[in-house]
Amino acid sequence: MRGELFRMDRVVFNPFSPLMLLFLFGLLILFGLAIILFPILFLTAIGATFTKLGFSWREALLILVLTLAGSFINIPVRTLESRAAPAYDRYVAMYGRLYRIPQPVRRTVLAVNVGGALIPLAISLYLLYDSVVLTGGYLLLELALAGVAVVTVVTKLVAQPVPGLGIATPFFIPPLAALFAALILSLFAGGVPEAAVIIAYVSGTLGTLIGADLLNLNHIAELGAPMASIGGAGTFDGIFLSGVIAALLA
Image (cartoon, rainbow, N blue to C red; front, side):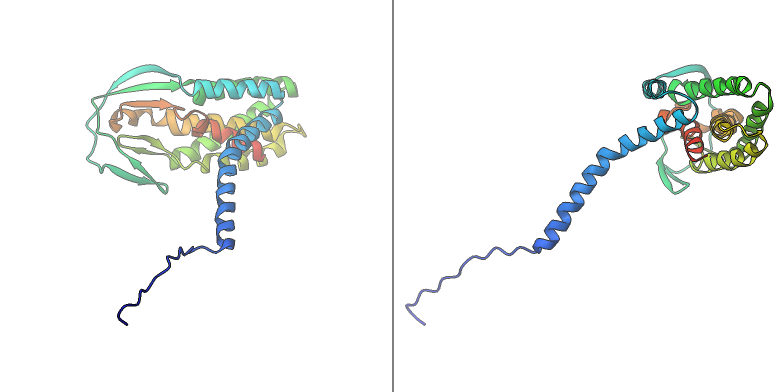
């Protein structure tokens, strides 16, 4: 109609209902809490594990602090001349995870991580010594070494060298092997209450160290990696976590 003026109101439409906005806001809060609480729960579980092993909370806290600090320290042991590595893709899938593979290098530095290898090793040796004092004999020591042998064999079977990366091991297999070995072997410990926990920690730690790292040292020069650090992931390394998880569940 000529001469008439038509006006259109602008309407802002909200695609989300108030209930949906409340739901999304709740998810955001839960996600934030998970980010905050996970490290706290993780560190609390580690502390609880060491108290089960006979350490006080103060000693457990000291071990945790030293382990975290030692995670950043790699002690070079020797330099290996890398042998010719086979051709491989830039990415490789291993145990459900995708790893980026760097270009192969001519020399590989073999190192030992303080937090991921040396501290767990020192704790295991202390527990083996303490087991002799605790029982007044060598029975618990022998059972713990038997558990180490079991976990070593299992870990060696599942550990696989990955060119350009290192030795890959499924994180759940060594602790489960240590747990089952501890539960069975502790039946022969003569009623020592700490037997299962000690056997689990020592088996998980030393078994992973020997089966995954020491028995695969001959493959290090073939990987073409710039550095191969034993226990290099620190508190998230298989050596440290295998002992902690196994002892916590025992």
